[in-house]
Length: 413
Image 1 (cartoon, rainbow, N blue to C red):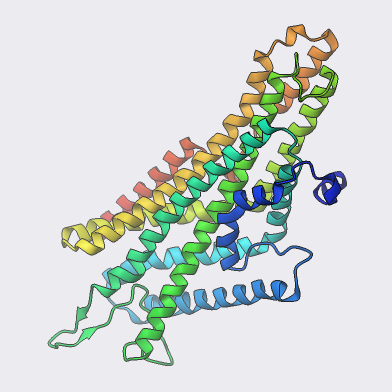
Image 2 (image 1 turned 90 degrees about the horizontal axis):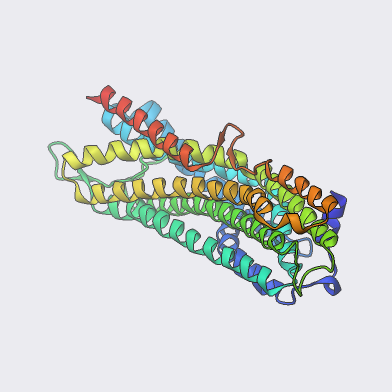
């Protein structure tokens, strides 16, 4: 491990890629912006005192906002609200809020592990020597950015409809009165004040909107981090495959002998596994919470959509459709990048079989067995070590959501 840490702290004169700073910025830009907003982006060792204090202030602010939303809502569900349908209607948003708080806390607690993963990525960009390797890494970085942007668009569009459009276009008239109750999508029981009169309503509504922004930023930031790290690992696997294809004959960029080329391949391959292990250790608990969150959120969103469709509430229907699409797309992308990671890992073993290994000296051909053996150890993304994030398990998650949906529908009809 000490050798890896030494590589991650190379001095500027050992930098292979002179443009690595701009490359790293391009690869991490979206993830950096999202996590920095909520104070969870790692602080560099050379940061100023203010730069070290700012994340702590942001974390304290975000925790206060989440607590301000979640605690009164639970009090309302447990102590004040008597209507069964309204209680049920609040459980979906409350579930999402509670899961968002859990994800945020886990993200904070695994800050050191995430920092190590980011250093790995920076080191790989710094050590790029050949144009072909740079193109592979840049192609994967661009793909990661596009997917992150899609997650961003779906999540924030749905969040804007739910937290802003839907409450502003609805109002519940009181019985035998012309007075309307000004709506909250997160109605709470505020023990010490009434949230309906001005300016209390405006203040609470604004805080709810900001809190919703924090929750959706947390979720999108987690997805952007996962996508960035996994696509980087896939790029490194593709570089190893490229070197395997040139193992026998080599080219102008490679080492002089097959022995040296094979040594480089094995060292690079093992480094990817170390990176993947760190990534899994840092994020598997977050992915577990996310799988639980998406499973229940898809169930609730589908149920609310069915109810609002019956009552022809157009804005509500559009809102729940956008939420449903967002949740399904996000968990699909998480499982899809997990599937890609497994596939790229397996491809190295296949490439080892397909090259002209018979043109190598006998002893060196036997050394390829090591590469094939390592490839059999498949790198995986898991949700809390319980479930692999693959496309087959994406279908399992949807089946579980539909099972909960049917159970909920049968209980309320």
